[in-house]
Image (cartoon, rainbow, N blue to C red; front, top):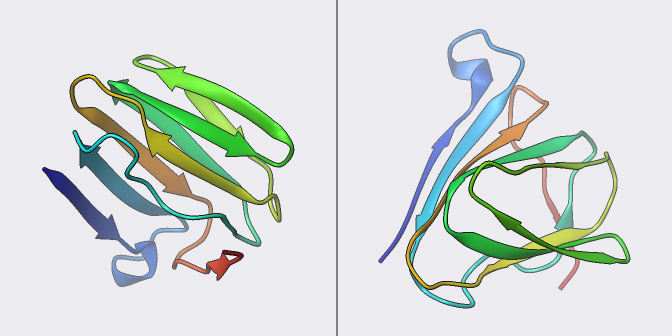
Length: 100
C-alpha cells in the first residue's frame, strides 16, 4: 500500500504546502530531486533512508529532518511496517526539479 495526499497552500492562502505520505512498500519513495525552498520531514512512524546532498541518514518515528533549499535529496522506505510522515514545503505551491 502506498498513499500520498498533497495540499498546496496557495489554494487556502497559506505560505506552505504539505504532502502526507504513507507506504509499506520497501524501497518506495521519490527519485533524486531538489526544491528552491526548504523541505522538512516529520516522521510519524516507520523508517526510511534519506539521501540529503552527500549524506545518507536513516530516519524513524519522532525524527525531524530538514533539507536546505537547493539540496538534492530522496528517500526510500526501509520497512518493516508502514512509513508515515508529513513533508512540509516552505512554499505556497510545489516546485520540483527532478535530477534522476
